[in-house]
Length: 216
Image 1: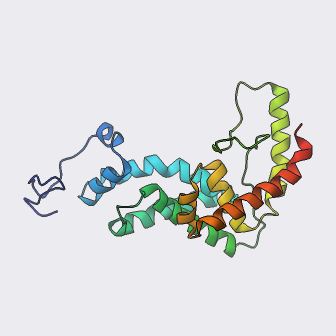
Image 2: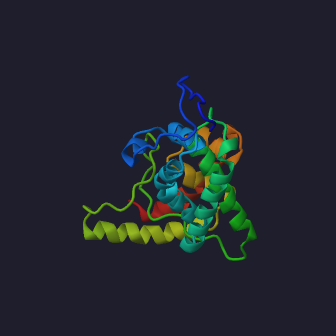
Image 3: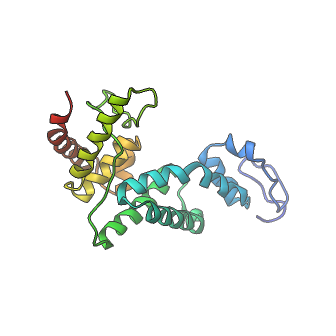
C-alpha cells in the first residue's frame, strides 16, 4: 500500500500497515481478515489458514476418502487462495469461495482416480434432525453398546455411499456434515437451487432404504 494512503474509513496512514496481534485477528470477521491481508499484513493469511484448515480437511477427506491426498488438496486450496485473493469478490462470503475451490479440487481428484470412491461418513443418525443440522459424531458419553452399534452402522453407510453418483455425494456431505445452506451449496457446486434439493433428496432416500433395517 502506498505511503499516506487512506483506509476504508478514510483515515490516512503510512505505507506499512500496523501489525495486528493474533488475538485481534481472531476477533475479526473473515471479511475483515481478508482486507487486512490485502492491505499487506501477511499474518492475516495465517489466521485464515487457522480458521479453515481442519474444516476443509474434514470436508475433502470425506469426499475423496484418502487423508494424505486430502491434505495435499487442502494445501493446494490455500495456495490458490493466496494467489487469487485479490480477485475475490468481497461482497460474497469468503467461506463459500474457499469451499468452492476445495470442492473443485476434490471433484477433479475423483475424476482422475481409478480407485473406487471411498469413505465419506463416520456415523449417521437414526432420523434427519427436523432443522437439518449436520450429522452428529460419536458421543463420548454414549454407552459401549450404543457406540458399537453406531460403528457397525457406519460400515453399512460406507458401503452404501459408494453407490451414490459423485454429485449426490458432494451435496450430501456439504449439507449433512458441513451444515451448509442450500444457497451456499448451489454456489459452491455451481448448481441451481432446485437441482441441489433434488440431489439431496435422492441421496437421503437411497441411504434411508439401505440403512432402515439397521435402525429400530
